[in-house]
Length: 497
Image 1 (cartoon, one colour):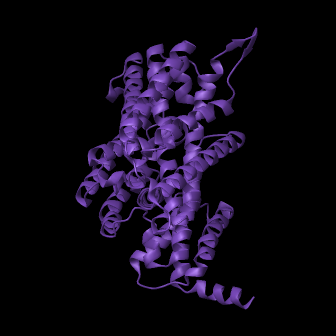
Image 2: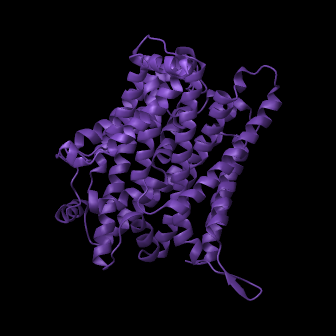
Image 3: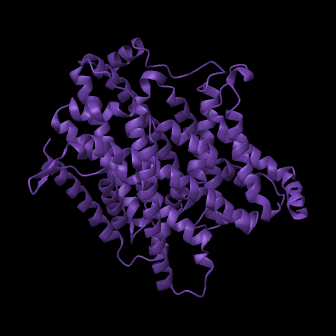
């Protein structure tokens, strides 16, 4: 695959995104940026959210888990499916009834200003870590498998483009097409990117099936014989025990979708509650199917690698086979799919983080002293700052990375979304008030206690290993810290000091 062809693909793809941004960003206001003027078509939101939820982590990491974990990741996906119904019929009605732009505004009315800002800050921390981790993995794959293979000459000297330049260029692209239109733009760009991502998935599956001379049924038999097809783990002590995975997956969805401004800003950009619920349910069915196909691709990739005598695994499996073993046309489609997995990892996140910081932390909507033009300028400055933060974290993950990303991402969710889960659960399920000033203490202690549980050697727990249930434990500790008045005792302690 020539360097020129790759550069032309990247340029053409970016120009399409810029064209969409130009059309959707005309006469854009802050309300356009934050909530698409509450006019986004529900079916586009549903389809585009598939790409946002999958991102580069699913595209690259999930297929690579099949050799060691089989299809057990599908247990988590079943939990996701259950969680989406909770989001659709419990949380969405609440957000629409209160006509929220930032979902964390709910915490202000229910628990108080400090609880509100605490929830928003936990979202900002969690989404920054999660989004930059997703962005990093795709930028790294592009760097290793595409950019590093390009050589350029200048003054008789050959050179390659360093990772820092690649990451900066991609972040600049994302910044340019999200800068004006925000949510209104990414509803359309995510739809396009989801299409290309799924196209790459289907093309790769079909080609490998044909190359190995398998039908779908015979490929399932081959994967079963190779030990890849195990879905349910029945050992209660195992980290992947099916009940832990399903329950954990449900609460991951409730937290990472229902309590996440990035995901909810797209849902509440739909005009009516009924259409938003249709979006969520449609999206949930599509996501289950797509995740199963990604796992199937993982099994096929390992069968294909075995047939070629290639010893590959983990995050390197899919890109290595796509670019080094499959025909160039399939490699081109893979690159397009990879790029399409890259942009939703960051465009919605940087838009949501900008919205949350402006509304929740800076109080932009409550500030009557600033004109609309001043608010737009402030929002653009915040947008630029988050772009810089994203770049810094991508560099940090490049320095730290030493393995598969999917488990790291789930660990981040377990510790950072737990306090959000506890805050919203307390607000929705009880009518009690809290000592608002001390809510941050509970929200910091809960993840620390949860993490300390993982330090207990498994043999002290009868061989039990913690998994996805850590999110539920974290949220439960936050809830109990608020519910049982532990926060009051902490309050007396600190006041006395």
